[in-house]
Image (cartoon, rainbow, N blue to C red; front, side, top):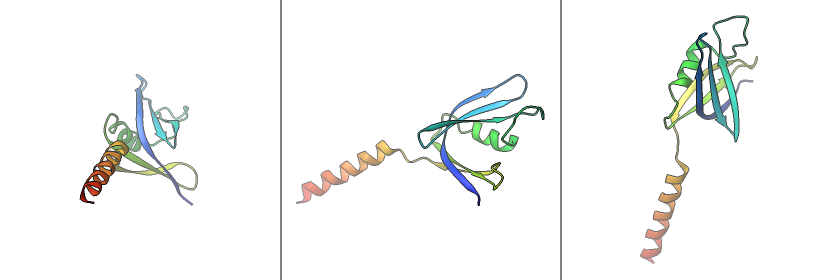
Length: 102
């Protein structure tokens, strides 16, 4: 059964060897994913997917990474993140408007 995790990229490291590491924050945890063109190194992400993750650094884009039954990533989905602070402010404004109508 495929699984997925939802979060954001917090750090990207690119090495002269061509390797790329991405720190991915999800569920109050930080997980590092790596791509390596060197087959003798542990590269757990396909190049196309890691480049997509890299492109979301310093944006309001959240990512859902889907993994196959073998635990390898199969694809990613991108979406605009909800800002919890904005949601709280909107709720407070709505509550203030409701109070003034009474």
